Amino acid sequence: MDLSFSAEDNAFREEVRSYLAENLPKQISDAVRNGTEQTKEMAEEWHAILNRKGWLATTWGVEFGGPGWTPVQKHIFEEECCRAYAPRIVPFGLNMLGPVLQAFGSKEQQDYYLPRILDGTDWWCQGYSEPGAGSDLASLKTRAVRDGDEYVINGQKTWTTLGQHANKIFCLCRTDPEAKQQEGISFILVDLDTPGIEMRPIRLIEGGHEVNEVFFTDVRVPVTNLVGEENKGWTIAKFLLTHERTGIAGVGFSMQSLEEVKALARKIRRGGRPLIQDPLFAARIAQAEIDLEAMKITNLRMLFKAQQQGAPGPETSILKIKGTVIHQELKDLARRALGPVAAPFPGSITDGNIMFGPEGTSNNAARYFNNRKTSIFGGSNEIQRNILTKTMLEL
Image (tube, one colour):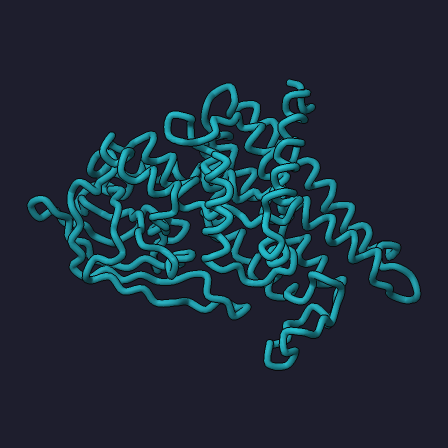
């Protein structure tokens, strides 16, 4: 297997780089660079820019409105977006539900929902986790009971990312309580304007509002909103999570973070010399870079395999584990490099105009704390190790 990029791949990289330089709005890239909150309007503006180019739905086939890229082209695109400080594409409709509908949805569902995802009419959120069903997702208790041509849904979902912006949610619901855990679950699409739905914000440790909890009380949903077969939702759930875990690796974001840490270590002085010359700190940077290079090679190997087989396999758990650990280590190194400067300062103190550290570091502590979640969501790293031992090592 040749892990080097072809001439065509390098030409594509130049095309992406040029397009980003000409079309990525500065106010959006500045917000990403400085770690400030990215609004719904920013996400929608960036999505619309990419959609006009045909580059928004990177995981979709041409027949559904995607660019028809190879996995390697998708990797190059994500890498260049990170390099340019473009915002992460909101994944729930585009990278999660879109591929599910294309693989399991009816023709009517594809024709109705896919164009609305592309043009921004619908903003989707994910209804998987529950207070008692996180990594052990198959133990979920939200019920959907058939009543004529409708399902009546009761239960609770939690950690619903960006649900405050969404108008629709895709949910895993238990439709057969007598079946084994994985065999009685269905995948159902729900309009958040339906009576009986309440969404409450959850404030995170750094003070941000990124996630929510959602309550369903006698929520009536048309049976036509069922994706695939009733009680076969676990197959769809696993398919979706495989795509989610591939994206969680965030190779491009870690490459970006590594360069930021190196730049900080060259600027900041300790004991009269640049921090990059401190043996212990330099050793941690070196180890992180070694791990990142190994993960990049692993990622390319999996891209090659996906290119041959058409879908990622259980090895995506490796990317999820290593990707999140590396990214957390780099955020920790940046926090340690800045020292007290990394501490957050409320806007009422700084008036939003005072820069206490090097440019782009004013929200470093918030970014560090926010990234503690990455080794937990999408299936905790402990669960990922169990998946690997069962599916690959057959233990």
